Every structure is written in C-alpha cells, then in structure tokens.
Image 1 (tube, rainbow, N blue to C red):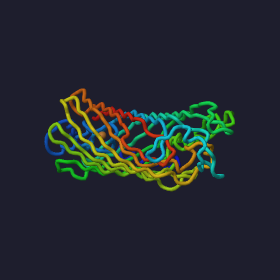
Image 2 (cartoon, helix red, strand yellow):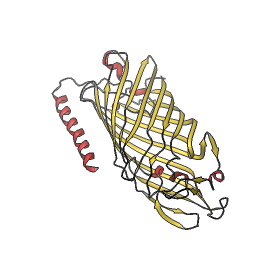
Image 3 (cartoon, rainbow, N blue to C red):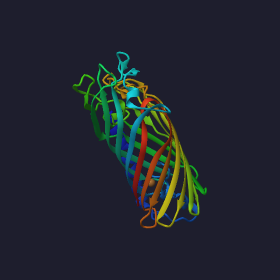
Image 4 (cartoon, rainbow, N blue to C red):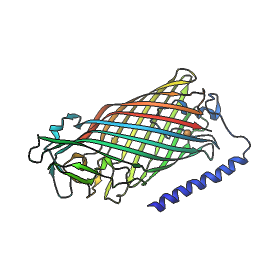
Length: 368
Ligand SMILES: [Cu+2]
C-alpha cells in the first residue's frame, strides 16, 4: 500500500519539478488573479465560490495555490428514514451488528463531532491543466448512552470515544474544458490513496457495566482503506457582481479494503449563487443533494450492540443549504478567506443512524 502512495507522490513531484523548470524559462508569468477583465482571466472566479466546494477552478500556467481548510461536521440525534428517533426507540431494537448474527442494541450514539484540517497545493503546468494534492488530519468524537443488558430501558452510564490521525491522501488533475468561453467548465480526475488508519480502538462501557477495549465502528475510522476514484465536473460563470455555478462530484470506492469492507459510493450535486458586495466581500448561497450507499462487506473486529457496527446503517439521501461569505482582504483573489455554514434541509437515512446537525467550512487560500 505504502509503495503505491510513494510512487504516486514521486510522480506528482516529478510532474511539479519538470513543469516548474519549464515555467522558469517562460518569460511572462501570469499573475492575473482577481482582475475581472476579458479573455483567459474570465476563468479566475475562485474568489466567490462556497468554502465547501473544491476542484472548481484551474490556474494559469506556472501559478501555485496553497490552501488550508478546517472543517467541522456535527451530528446530533438519530433517525430512520425521515423519522426522528429517541435513544429509547433504538435501545432493544434488533440489528445485524456482528458476523455471528443479530444483536439487540444497548448502546445508542447521541452526538458526534468530526473536525478535519485539510492542506492542499495546486500547481498549473499549463493554462488548461492544474494538478492538486491534498492531505488531511482529523479528530472525531462520539458520545453514547449504555443501557442494561437485562433491561433495554435502564440507562447504566454514558461514555465518549475519540479517534484522531491522518486521513486519506488525494491527488487530482483539473482540466479546463472551455478556455475561450465566458464560462468555465472544469473536469476533475482524482484518486484517493488509502493512507488513513482503519483499526482505531477505544474503551467503551458495555451493557454488563464493564469497561471494554474494542475496535471502533466504521464512522469513527479515519479513511476508506480503498483506492477511490473521485471525478467531478464544475461549471462557473459570473456577470458583474453576480456569480453562479454547479458541480457534480462523486467518490467511487474500488474493491474491498484490508478489513473486508467497502464504504458506500457517494454522489453529490451542488448549485450555488454568489453576490459580490464590494471589492473585498462576497456572499454565497448553496444547495446540495447527495446519495450515499450502505457499506458493503464487514470488518469482523467491529461488533457490539450498537447501530454504528451494522454496515447497513450507513448512507442515505441528504439535502443541505450552505450560507457563506468570502473575504478578499487585499481586494484581489491572491488571498481569500472563506467561511460557510451548512444546515440540513432533508435527511432520509438508512437507519437507525445519526443525523447531521450543522457543518462549518473555512478556507484560506494563497495564490502566487
Ligand atoms: Cu486553486
């Protein structure tokens, strides 16, 4: 596994260094960010795109962009389909949470927080092709209630589990399909490399009232464990102070991971509009819809009377709204600070499953 990661990294670095050398011979560097005039510059719209959107733009030949994107996803409460469930609706329900057969649930998750810090670099070897590499560090916490084995209505205690570490590493090529049009259409071909840990453990309070060390459920692990194909197609355009765009993106997991399962494939469609209030501040409004499949296969080390240990209790259909702003402190897009708050508007989940509460995306990008 690590061999492939190193090969991919080496290939990326080789692509960067040859193209950097070529860019240096080139007498005229393009530094046209934020200059909203005609021609190729029309494509540099990335000043006013929602903070949660990635892979939406390409850069001019020889240009770089570094970005830091902290992100939070908060989940609170549970539902099955579109119906909200109380913890006592879940305790005692039969689920297929181990390889040995059905179990009645005695541990109910109530809240989960995922914090992710993403660092990425973009480099454009040509005016139409931009290369991107991204790494991430995450921290997840999950709160639970434990009910007694002998009585599904009797709470015996609460506990929190936590995992943290590096996530999967993503490498992508972004290609500008419409270089001479007033709009931009960018195709992304990306791959996610399985660099994250999938055997994170925690101490739990079991229904017998004892503390037990065990492998955490799928949701608390840090990556997919598989090579994933991540294609995307993004359209953006602007006119005066107004900008708008749409994106289709997906994550397709290839094969089974070493633990014996595959996370559900995910497809997301987003549309957004933006309004530039002045040279420094823009606002965005986004609507996204996604479909995520259930987990295929199972990790035999993940078991226990809890919904998150059942591979069927993953995925579903969700729609959300995002409200954001973009700040350009130096009145150009060389540095952009973006923030977006995401709120769910529709959740139809393969449950019982925890429901989303809110999301927060921040992005700082520096182009040169
Ligand atoms: Cu960029």
